[in-house]
Length: 159
Image (cartoon, rainbow, N blue to C red; front, side, top):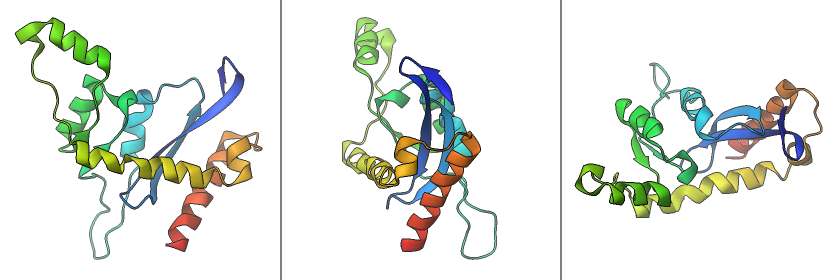
């Protein structure tokens, strides 16, 4: 558990596919920045292939909100060959405009693809239907993460 202004808390970070099925879940303290664990969440993705071969670990695209809009995450995604669909923060836009021609081009943004980001929010809404996840009854972080993983497994089984 992490300590925040409201007391002890924790935060679930998840990656889901286009259908809202959970692919990876990472648990951190509540005060932890979303962008700080982004690489852990992406590295946790393992999708087994139907035929022989290694599991798939690289998504085609990552759709995320403005909290993940920074150069470190964008460069990480580009080095792995993953398309980033992340809107830019307004302060980043203003900073680039203030630099003039030295500010460079804005990063590419696919507004149509970004409309699919709500599947993540819907998955969190389904997970919070579980009272144990919504209120965090478990004292140990490993038990709380296990509850979230069990919720994800049941979502896959329902599919």
